[in-house]
Length: 174
Image (cartoon, rainbow, N blue to C red; front, side, top):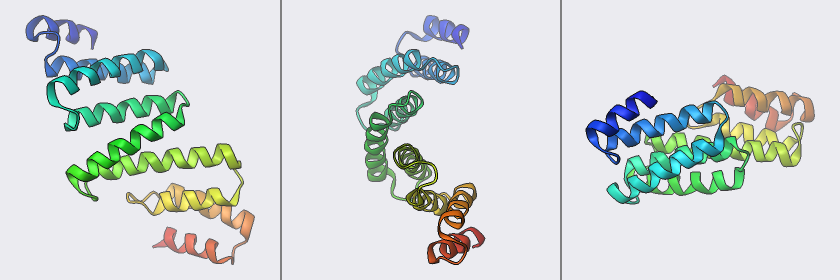
């Protein structure tokens, strides 16, 4: 990516959209390597340039903000990540409608953050965590692994015949 970046900068200029896309890819690699501060700095530079070129609400700007939220989540900065995801969600809903894949992906990320926060705050075995897993599992998009986690927790804590356990089992089967 660094070689491609150097060539693109030389041929296209520092602020060309292809250069910014390559820089975003480098930031994703840095994030994958656990170099969160470097990834965040790279994404924030890309975001500033994209906002300047494309405006606050352009899809590329929203994608970069989403990527920043993912880095914040990776760093354990859940509140900041959630705020970023929620802002992106509101703009994507406005632009694309409730059922667009980008809206659903953002909703999924928010649900994931809520589940992780609930697990940290309540503990892995708390019955309320099952409600989060259930809501996340029924989607959209549907996630059977989350429904299974909700079912396992509800069976262990509430019993196999509890109405909430049956509700989750039915959702998993349906």
